[in-house]
Image (cartoon, rainbow, N blue to C red; front, side, top):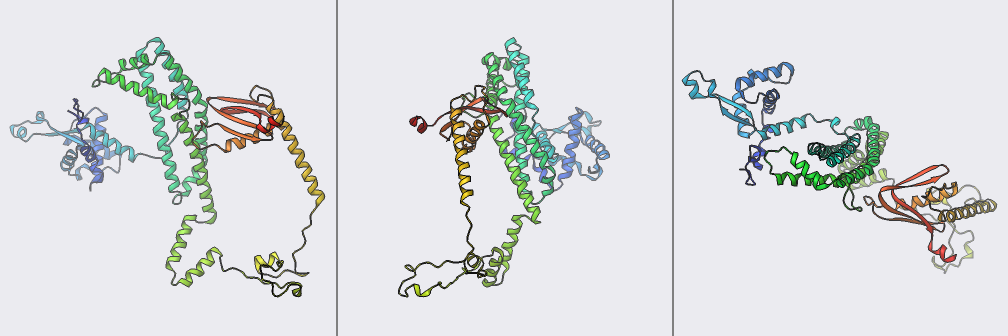
Length: 516
């Protein structure tokens, strides 16, 4: 019986402490020998040879030693002691094989045979996956979205035709594909975090792969943005063929022996809810897991660019800023006196005492001596004297007069006012037409629209795609209303502007309408 009180076979009989003990051989003194013994069992299991005698283990180890130089010689190992320790940890199970006995004495002594426990085999595979992990495993699959769309189309067709086995195959494949996407994404972003944490130790690794990383992230984000509306629509098409019918067909074709029909039905319903939350959440305001993944991808691109800037600055200076600060802190700790610490501070940060300057008035007799400093007129100081402490050059001791060109200033002001009038006229014309009805905007109207979009989009809050955005200028008001799954196209003489996920409206501002 398992912990839940239901009949179990092998794996469920292991409690929490027993499962933790499965990894005891990883930290044991002779851990490499234990690892190769388990690899011998794994190699035999691949050939459908599950139960091994001690002599079989020796033979399997000799075969591994012939092809792997790191494998120890089985004649130099205390194999019975290693096997007994693995049995104590729960990785292996020991049995007796009386068929090997040829005499009564051998039968009484019995022959021990060993095999993997189910939990022990999973523990060994987990250790092997950690040992074989590399950068090649940390990738985002951008090609999976086309497969997801094709499987959803096939799932809708199979559910309409009543093909239960095809429904089970496609739904199971979709579930495994989305789980793989989530696992790959988590592993990839964790790899980026490790790369940013260790860039001071291995900057050459990051610099060698920075272009590949950015291209990989950009391609993945583009594919995700392109397929997200189509995948959402495909999910709705599948549900239109009958959700209850879909779940019942998948549960009927499920071949799990130790699950009741009700358990299989609830499991497949839960899987579909998870798939729907990934691609098409029930609420229009809710963010799907695909949207969150797109946001995480954009954040990762920003992190990579920030990391590139830090690495570049560190290599330009020959040492990273963190290393510089650590050495400086060590210098402050090792100084012998407080005066030396102050001198080091002044030398590093170029800070010192305030500079006092004094200049006599041109006509000292013009100011009464009874006046205080607060009431006496100020004395003009040279900028050179204040900034550097040096007296001004030859002349009357005052800074040179700044030449002001009133004609040039007037010309610039007139051109500025003309530009403003042109923008106001373009904005008024823009408010009189629908920007998304296909009418091509001229250059002035397109320039005004771009400036309004810059102001509106700059006010976006990170992670919030459901907030209405607005901006006002030149007497008009631009409003961006969230419309997930749709986009607005604005035609201009220079091309087309696509706004994904927003509806665009341009109206006259309140004060402009009141004046009219």
